[in-house]
Image (cartoon, rainbow, N blue to C red; front, side):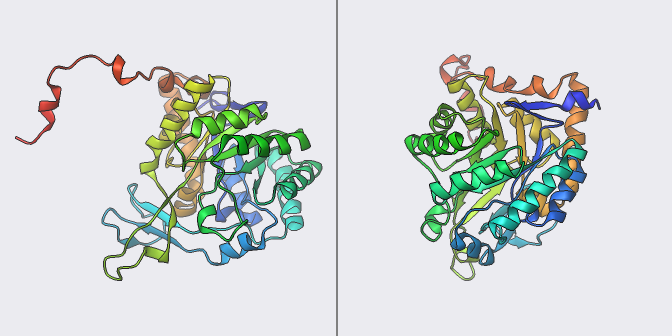
Length: 349
C-alpha cells in the first residue's frame, strides 16, 4: 500500500488518507483523540462545543442503543452485526470552552507528528458567540474549523442549545459571518433532514466555505412492543449502514449541481474501507466515521485505512481517482435502456 496512493485534498488541506474520525463522545477526552490518531486517521474532529449550558446538560441526559434486525436491543460492543441499527441522544462536550480549546490546540500540535490534523468543531447556538469562538480557535493555532449547523437534535433540544439550519439564506448568513472572522479553512456540516441538501451546500460554498460535510443524521422514533413506549423514551438520532445510499445520493446530487471542484466530505453509513471507497465514488474527498468507531473501537479506523489501501492497489487507482467516479456516470431514469416487460420477472408467480 503506497502512502501517496491514499493522499487526498479537501480544498487547500492535504490529508495523508481520506479516513476522518468524526466528532462523537469517544473524542471528548484527550486519550480518545490520541487513540484515533494512533489508529491512523487522516484527521480527527473533536467533540463539538458552544456556549450553551443546555447543550452540555444534554450530554448528561444522553442514552445509547444498538438494535438488531428485529428491533431488539443488543450489547453495545464490536460483536454487533453489520446490519445493526444505532440510535441515541447526544449532547456537547462537558468541558468549558477555554479548557476545550487548550486541549484541542495541544492535540493538534501532537497530531503534526502523525502527519494528521485535529479539527476544532463548533455547533451553532448564538452566531455572535460562534464568531468569537472561531477567532479564538484560529488564534490558538488550530488549522481547521468544522462549523456544524446540521445537528439532528435542534427540534428536540432546549431552545438555542444547538442548530439545524434548513434555509439556504440562513446558511449563507452564518457562514459569511464566520468566514469573515477567520482565515483558516472552514468545513460546514449541514443537515440531511431536508429535500434541499444541494441548495444548502451551494449556499455554504457561496459564502466561501472550504468544504461541506454531508449530511447530519436523521431523526427517528422506535416503539417498544412490550412497554408500548418509544425506545429510550423519545425521538432519537439514528444511523447505521442503511444510511450509506442516502449519503451517496446527496453527494452525487450536490456534485452534479455544483461541479467537481467543490470539496465534499461524506458522513453517515461507512463501516469499512470499502464503504469509504463507495462514498468517495459518489463524490466525497474524505469520509467521517463516528458512531461505528464508538461502537466497535478505534482499531476500526486503521482497518478502514488498510482495506481502502488494498482496494486501491487492486484497482491500480489512487484515492483521488475515486472522487465522483460513480456520480459522474450516474444516468437519469429517462436515459436508461428499455427492458420490455422486465417487471414481470420480479412479481410473485
